[in-house]
Amino acid sequence: MTEFLVRRFVKDCEAVEKMSVRTAYGVLSSVVGIFCNVILFVAKWIVGYFLHSISVMADAFNNLSDAGSSIIGLVGVKMASKPADKDHPFGHGRIEYIAALVVSFLVIEVGFTFLKEAVGKIREPQMLKFQFVSVVILIISVGVKLWLGMFNRKLGKRIDSKVMLATAADAMGDVITTSATIVSLIFFRVTGVNIDGFVGLGVALIVIWAGIGIAKDTLEPLIGKPVDPEEYDKITKFVEKYDGIVGSHDLIVHNYGPGRSMASIHAEVPNDVEIEVSHEIIDKIERDAAKTLGIFLVIHMDPVEMKDEHVLSVKKQVRRILDALDSEVSIHDFRMVDGTDQINLIFDMVVPFEYDDKRKNELRTSLMKLLKIADERYECVITVERSYIGNAQE
Image (cartoon, rainbow, N blue to C red; front, side, top):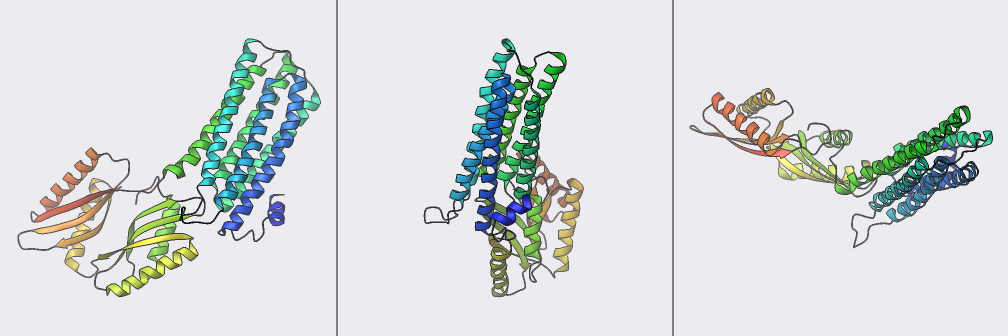
């Protein structure tokens, strides 16, 4: 069914790097979500009304909020697809994140509303009515939500949309809540004990938790998050595959919405190559990155020593000593100013982001002491930098 809908309603569906195609996927996801959730709301509301069940009613209005969320998502996707203008030179892509944030607050609000009602039902329980057809409708609802979750998850992975993945997670949460509602009705039928209020309480808490999860997922790219290790590897390998590039470091990626990224990176080039030659290579990489990766890439050129055996051996010595101190730390931009009585070692040291100032200073001091023991002429000028890679070392 998913592939049928994609083929039917998304033109050129394989070209997911195109903004028009991404927008079409977003519209499809929103329209399907609106349709399914409105149908589920009507069916569950009718069931909940005749059963006098707060858990079923809570579940119904949760579906209505999901339909409203899909409408907001649809508006957000359409607005996010607007091209860049003079006031927004990086486009409007982050509107999609803002729309998802609004959705999260709607979900949380619905959860708190039914949390209040569930507490009231626990204090003053009402008589439930069990009907087999109602349970069948709820079971069908579970099936629809399960498919909707897998549908959004598949589309979200295909176009790398965090909003769709969050919607998928919300749908799977609905599967849990509706299943809990079915259990409460069957439990009442078998035992005659009304646990509807307690189940409604659980449903409300799950809805609130889902809303908080969506908010967290959408706030991260808005606030700014570290580059994903897989994206880091993809960009660095792309840069380093070109002849004339011997290494790279200091990759920072700025996200301006799904499929809209700007990145900066330092590319190492041999210091004995003409600067015009290296500059031409850098320009080509930037142009190719825009075409191939869809990233506006800005490259800073760092000349490094490649032939002086003495400099290279000292650099290996520094790395060896540093590895013994802390294997999670790396160095780059190594330069050496040789002299008879003093040898200046100038380099940058990259530490994991979680290292505090005390640990960074202790690490730098220890490294300088050990290098001094190795050769008393060594004088170090070390710049400590933090890694911007998520859950991985540079």
